[in-house]
Length: 113
Image (cartoon, rainbow, N blue to C red):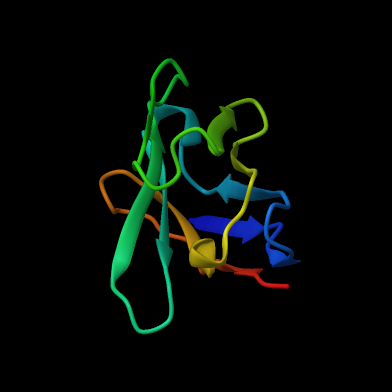
């Protein structure tokens, strides 16, 4: 089983990034998925979730209106489009099954001028 995140990097405030999470080794389309982030010195923070079929999405208040979660079950890939990024969005971003059964290694997002 693997979840591999990509797309992180350094971006200026107000910029955008698109994170991807490639899944393998399990029936991706059967699982609700989520993005979680962890900033330096802080605990994990739930960012967004999506139902297995993509029919429902949920967002933390801190990212609502700026981030969009989506998935392509045919490609076994989860996405997080992040717009209007702020310095406080700086964190390692992880994709995971909502149940917590599977989790990736994370990708660093740094928002700084």
